[in-house]
Length: 98
Length: 224
Image 1 (cartoon, rainbow over the protein chains, first blue to last red):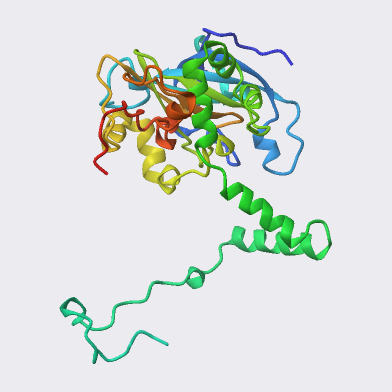
Image 2: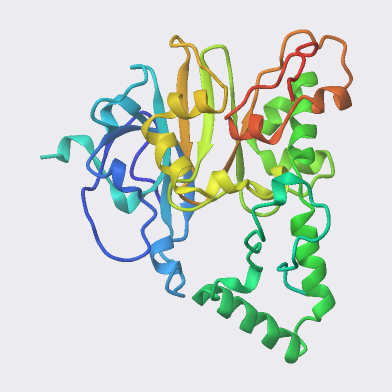
């Protein structure tokens, strides 16, 4: 399994809302962050949750977001960040964003 | 016997208002679906001889016995041994094994507080937590308020815990949504020069490793 993204890449989380056991929080869907780390292959939790094998495994990334970009009227500072572990099937290159 | 006895003996004036309500029994609420399933699976495993009741009990006892002491030992070692700290930041589970601590099979990541960054851990989707190193999560960690507000207004939540982070320090929230668990490696407080590892470990509490508190500088009196 080759990871599609590398550290530093800008990635946009898919703004999708499928049913099922999804590990991508709602508040980052449609948001753009940067790959902070490529964690390697992990079995797909959306499959594992239903007793299936979770294969093929997906690359898992740590994606860092500017917190102020995630929320309207964020009350912290512009430096604050939020880091979330996101599986590759939820990420797109930023330029594909419409 | 129910607590409905007449007040013919001296209870003091504060009890003159009559019988007080019962503390509800644990069984008062109906079993949830998953509680019933857990109970049934446990019973079946015992009935079929897969495990014994004593093994099940011992496992629960061992899970309940996990405490933040293991994580605190690791933090204290990292404060006194740069090589260990580097290993811990690279691979917590392997570094734990160096100290004969079993961190389990789920990969754990330590995130380091610095002059410029303060880290705090949350699991917005459930209650993921590095239990083998810092024990069972407190109830508030599992509450909807903590899970939703820590990502939305982390500085306000931290201030409610008594932890005010200056504006020139980045607050970095880690949402453990997937296959890793996180712990904070706090900064060593000033005033503990020459302290032994054991003494330093005493400064490292559960909340410091979640990131909602900072290790207290020695000499700072607790008001508790």
